[in-house]
Amino acid sequence: MKIKNYAQAFGILLSGFMALPAIAATFEVPRSFEIMYVDLESAGQFGNDFKVDLDEGQHQIVVRFNKLLRSGGDTHEYQSEPIVLDLQFAKNGYLILKAPYISNQKQAESNAKDPQFTIYDDVSGQQVDYKKQNLKTKSGLQNTRDYVTEIERLTAKSSTSKISSSSAPMPAPVIMMEDVALEMMQFWYNQSDKVTRKDIRIWIADDMYKPTVANIQHQMFQFWFKRADKEEKKSFQAWIVE
Image (cartoon, rainbow, N blue to C red; front, side, top):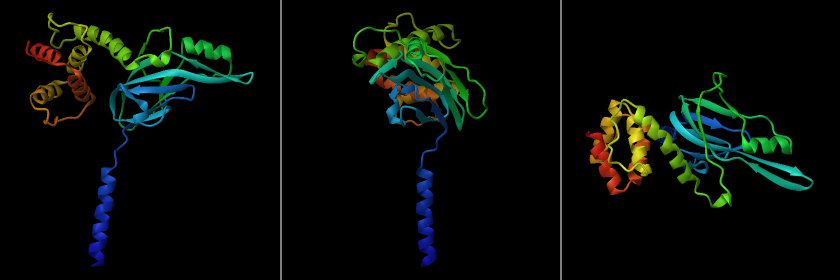
């Protein structure tokens, strides 16, 4: 009886370990920066403002310079516009954003206008190449801004130029390019390999279908397809058969 009980306990313990999510990669920033969004989701859903754990593959991470300094008994906040980063993460990778130490008002004001930083791979110690886009400065109260929509429009513009230069299917001329969801569906379809494109086409017909290979391209396509309206979905389906 004891052996049986031990076997049951071991089975429960083993299944508990197997259920734990595997951390594939990590991104970290210093205290003078904050992580705002990861793939358009609030960074708070992933961890804290300074470090997030994610799956391996390509991710869009939005950061900004955000420094508090005390002067004469008062606290002053210096904040930059959001910066959109496109980063590629290897399995068990650890990327770190490194920035100069800010100790005075002049340095803080300068970095709020033009944040200075580099990104390193903590495993290899090498500097990492990345794509960077900055949101434009806007007047008025910043806490009333819809940053997600601004980021969507910013990245949609750059993805449109990528689509036009890609060897994948060309966009249909009838498409209204103001439709962000449609542009993003086209973009992620173009970024996919043959197997993922086939999975996408099957999934459109049957949303219960499980892809043969899970990757960021398929996940992001699903995200934008679910946000698209009926006309955008029809336009996309007409586009892929051309």
